[in-house]
Image 1 (cartoon, rainbow, N blue to C red):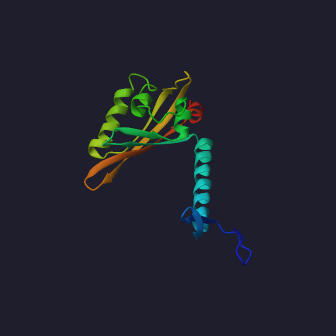
Image 2 (cartoon, rainbow, N blue to C red; image 1 turned 90 degrees about the horizontal axis):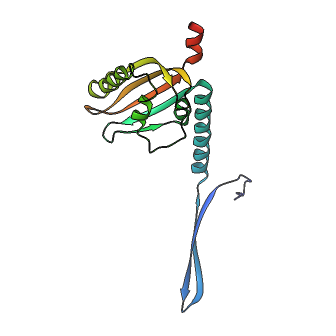
Image 3 (cartoon, rainbow, N blue to C red; image 1 turned 180 degrees about the vertical axis):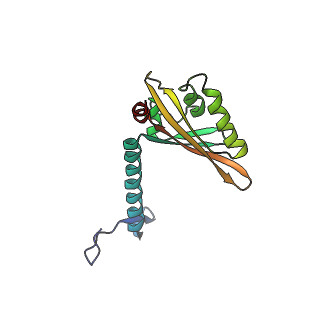
Length: 169
């Protein structure tokens, strides 16, 4: 709606009809100014889009693992690095481990377990084979997030470092 001063405002309206003997005898309405909420929602959408684009440009994916539920969440870029379609129902830890060489998996598993059990962060680099069969190098990091005296979740990222490794070689 347009306010008296000419500014555009977002409003939410609700109304209710009052009937008596089946006849309309009145309407009660409420209008609320929700402009600030709409501006906040738009700013959040813009920020999320920027973060998504930035992750893609940098080749950085993010992930989170909930210790109690043993469930993970990946950003879109993490799926792209693994060359998998987005599927929140995946067992993210098990799926990701399949991309590492068999001899490297115990090192990653131990680092992840120490992060959960002892609160020890990790930062590792390994060869990586995507689900499309492409050979890459990745750097993966994880850090514990405490709630009170326990580790509640692990936050991390995965970065495609293939170009850097090729330049070093």
